[in-house]
Length: 185
Image (tube, rainbow, N blue to C red; front, side, top):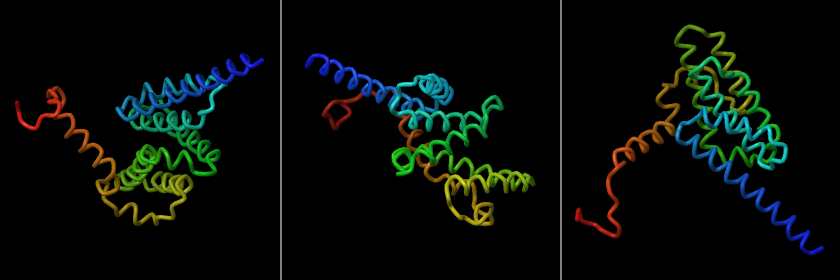
């Protein structure tokens, strides 16, 4: 009987550990901008019924679909937002939104940029529709006039900083590491 309990406990521990690895892998892929891979892998993972981290995976699925919908019509902006709303509805204690806030910022600044772009293009009706959606999702009562008068570069300061750091780091790809050294030798 003790062996049965030990085996069951070991199995549950391994299952939880593998899910954490899969979620970490999704995070890494998302960080690297492989939104299509994140979308496909998260879609596959969501079909598994035994997942405990289903909401986290659904979050990455929604975020990757949103990012892809900005580039290709094949992916649905509406479905991405709907999935994000589902994540928020089940995340009553704001655990996921606090944990993955830096990823959610991509969605938030993307929506603001869309509002600004549509307004500048003269599509005020669609701009207002996305503004309403933005306030519904993020519960921010930012006046519409404040958003449209805000310059697009200022909205995504975090994303800009992130991109600047990545560009700086890319300069050092291929440079050999000198262990414990301070000189060029």
